[in-house]
Image (cartoon, rainbow, N blue to C red; front, top):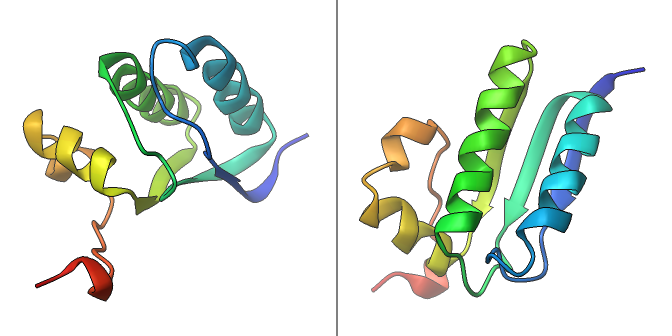
Length: 102
């Protein structure tokens, strides 16, 4: 049964070492809701496996007529999105905390 919005916070790195377990968590969470909010504010490291997982989650949500949004980006996540020129492609607002600006 799917409910409204579900929020998950990723506390570990989004690297190849964690990708399989994180994929299972993301897909399970997506099955349980209509909108999945992903908080990546604590992600210290993200590699291409982590980036691909975000793409997969967005694609799976779209195929199921659901939404998956990144609601908080760590500096590492913002850097990877910039590197791949995908910030606009993901469609999620990039909020930079005031303590990081300047």
